[in-house]
Length: 395
Image (cartoon, rainbow, N blue to C red):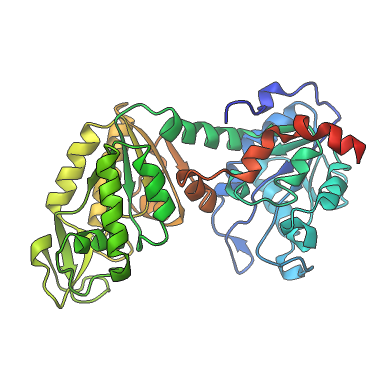
């Protein structure tokens, strides 16, 4: 995506009303927001638009009300939270403030159906549409896709930052490029692996999915998580990587334990010698050292998924060690690093380095679909208005 309009392209917007799609689907426990990341990352866009004298109507979903009005999922509680976090007064629904938070978009049945009538209803409330919610732009919803056909459309600062980071990582990267991919199963990341083979120079696998590849090489992985019905698929991926000049890097040693629990008795063994009554819970020291040499020769690293059972000590070691190594190389200017995905964000936070990478995406599903090479409807729609303007006016 190179041709979308940014906030720097906006004309004079003083006194105009901008409809802004945000992702305020924040984690809440007992009525309190437990993670403010999505809120604080929107502040640059809010500050910019306020400084230019615009009025802002914010569209966001919260939870899964499935097109029904469910007041337990109302966004009303967020208005004072946003006011405090952004330093600007935020009203709710009909309140007359320069920033107004509208009710949960998913209370409307037409939202998830990408209903154009609903999109036009929202569009009639404003003059310009700003999408600052990359994290929901993998969904073709009325507030992310249809509405972009109805109003002049611009990417907010967070959206632009995300798109530029992903473009730098995979579309126009500094080479060599290394992808670190972990997670439990190959079956959930087939599209990702297939796309990365064509994009990166080194594809490093860890986590449970690596066990399936090791097993596909003919080694016994004991009680380890392993998709035995995916062995042929793993072999096919290995062959495609070889044909595509992508070096597929698998563990050569495991940290194995008898039970999936913290501090279970454990040992480090070569992949040829996994005891039948144990399971691989992390990659070993030899594997970590080899991955570090690959990082040393890389200019760009893309990371999705932990290298082991990072939530269980001491099986967080590989993930923490490699995360801190990537952070060090990034801080020294030797590496561009982009990471994302729910477990990845949690793992890098656990390692204490989530603010030390070039870019850490909180987008979850949208980040994963981008890595898979899929077209994101909300991103594509950033350039939809001019193309659909004649049709929209005629209707």
